[in-house]
Structures are given as C-alpha cells and as structure tokens.
Image (cartoon, helix red, strand yellow):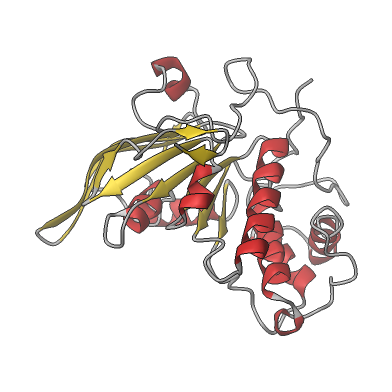
Length: 285
C-alpha cells in the first residue's frame, strides 16, 4: 500500500484547515513501483543509479560545477535522490559539501550543470522564484535549530506556512498537529530557550516538513547533539521522510550518520568519489 502524500502548500495557496501530517505506517513505494531501498544498502548516489530512476528522481544535480573567483570548488558532480530516500553527502572540510547543498537548494546558481526538482529545471530561475521555492517545495534542518527565540515553538513551525500566505490560525493549527508525532506534546507554547537541544531540533524538523516539501536538506543535523540524542533525531527524521515520501539530503561529517543513509556521495576537493568501504546493514565494512 502506498503512502498518500499530503496536499502541498504553495505560496498563497489554500489548504484544508487542520490538515495535519499524513503519517500512516504503510511502507513507502519508490517511483519505479518498488519499495524504497533499505537504509545502509550501499552504493553511491551517482551514475550507478539506472537512467530511468534518475529521470524520475525528486531531485537531480547533473554535472554541477561551481566557482568562487578563479577557484573551482565543485567539479561536474552528479546526484539523484528519490522520494522516500535518504542520501548522505560527506567529506572533509572544504570538500564542497555546503556548495553542493546550496546549488541543489537554489541558494547558489551553479556555474555549469543542471538542477532538477521533479520535472522542473530550476537552476535558471530568477532569485525571487528560487526564494519562493525554498518556502514551499523545499525544507531545511540546520545544525543549530535556528528557531526565532521570541516566538513559541508552534509559531516557529507555522512560520513557513504564514510566509506562504496561509492565515495565522490555520497555520498554527496545522503546525500543532506535528507535535504529537514528534514527541513534543505540551511544548507548543514553549520558547526555544526553554527547550533541550533534542527538542529544539525536533521543532526544526517539524518546521522543515510542515509545508509537505518534496525535498528536505539537513546540514549537520546532529552536530550540536550528544551521540544518543543525535541517533534518535536522525532515526526520527529518516522515518518521517520515508513515511511521507519526501527525499532527504544529509550533509554530515559523521560516518555513523552516513552509514545509516540509503546512499552516500563522498566529496574530496569538489569531486565525487565512491565511499570508502561498502555500506552493509547500516554499517561500513
């Protein structure tokens, strides 16, 4: 049985009042009619994927190259991420991880190559159109939650909906519906300063998913958490994106986080390489 994706919110678009997350426990099925791959099944997110799966990806980067001045920091990188799939991007500092994420998310326009979000090629879109895209079809989770300290947790979650044109009361109602599934019951009116690190990151996950995005980008999402809290947070995030059919791109230095993703892109000096070792049953061998 397939998971029905919630109706996606567009800037200024209508949405059913109180329509919360569709988190039925049915197994997500991939775009090719089969189930999404189990985490840790190995391989890279590069050209090893069959061409037809790349075409049907939720997100594709094709021969992405980017320069800052005379320095080329990204060299013809290919990546494809499918609905319900988690792909890690890892590598040493300065390897191009953040640049790749920014190109895929429309924050930077690549010097060369293509970025596709579903059927739409977005690398040529205007800055204003790419900004609107980041408020509707893309979600973000950062190393530090980056919640607004003056707003209660539920309004932080509702903010992307309100910026997209939804009425405040409706946005807050929909945002509140995420607190139960994320184990945050009773914390809706708590301000970020009164939350633990794990609670704050779960609020950030709710904010990333509340608009029913096609892709979520997580930039070092466990970097500010202790090991146990980080593992629980990543397990929750992977489960939620799998249930909702959302594609997840995780930028991480943590080999344990990468090992529990479906596939891995390893960057060195701006170039993509196969991972060291093969991912088997959630671990590297």
